[in-house]
Each structure stands twice: as structure tokens, then as C-alpha cells.
Amino acid sequence: MLALFPACGKGGPSTESAPGVTSSSFAQPETSSAPEEAGSPEEDAKKELRLGDLLPFTAEEVLAFEIQRRNISEIRSAVLEGEAAVQLAGELLNFAVEEFDRKRYDPVTGGDINYVITLSNGSVFEVRDDGSSVLINGGEKYLLAGESCELSVPESAVWHTEKQDFPY
Image (tube, rainbow, N blue to C red; front, side, top):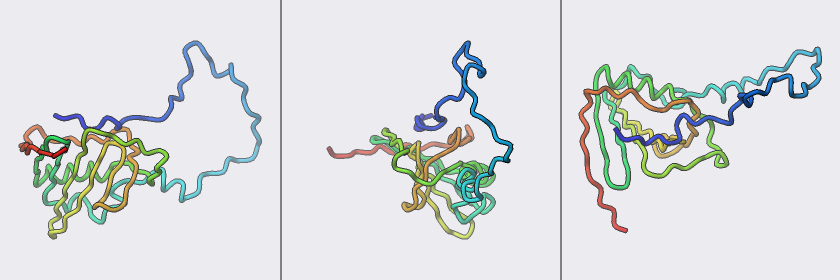
């Protein structure tokens, strides 16, 4: 299986203390008796944004789910239908995303994964995952925010490989 997700699972800086250092070694800020203010609903919504919040369908509406793992020399693709398609769509719709911020974008080289989702009503949606961001139907771009963006593709999936010949 190709590993095209080098940016997935990357987290921010570690919040763990260095070995042998206790939290009492650091100066503690003065605390006030006033209750802390909770984040605004807008901030909370940004923290909990899922790809499913951005796409106008549910996993149960998915008829076929195509995965295209693309790099400069080939496209490996598999089409899943039925329960497998619904399961993969559910996982994809659960990807955590954030508003796109060019300053935090970490472009990944080496390829991407394009998901082509066909609904029971005939509508088709595309989601391109480059490892650190997703592009929906060639338009809106969002940063991936989750711990993992790997889908559980069944071992029974049949993969087809198409060679690419790009002129330089």
C-alpha cells in the first residue's frame, strides 16, 4: 500500500515536560476568582469542524466510493460499492478540518489521494487529500486537523494501476 500521508498524524508541539522536570519548577501565574470565559460558539465550531459539515450528503447516500492514489508516475485506483463504500464515506466525512491558513499549510510532495464519491441520486463529489489539506470539488480548501486521515480500505479491494507519462 502506498504511504501518501506523510503529514497526517503530525501534531503541534509536545506539551509534555522534559524528563526530571516537575511542574512545580515553573512559576505559576496568579489566579483570580473570576470564572474563566468559555470560547465563543464560533471558536468551538472551528475546533470541531468535520468534512461532513462541508459536504451536502450523508454516508448512507453513497453508492460508490473510488480511491485514486496519484503520484507523478502512476494512478492506483479502487472502486468500492455497497457497505464498503458507506463505511469509507463515513470515515472520510469524519475527517477533522480547519479553515485554510496559508501560514500553517505544509505542502506535501510526492502525490495525493483523490476520492470520487457517487451518490444514489447520481451526484458526484470529489475530495482531494494532499496529506495536509483537502480540496472539495476543486474549490474550497481546508487544512486537515485530525490525528489520522487514513481510511480503512478493505483488503478485498481490487486495485488497478495506470502508468502516467509526463513530459519534462
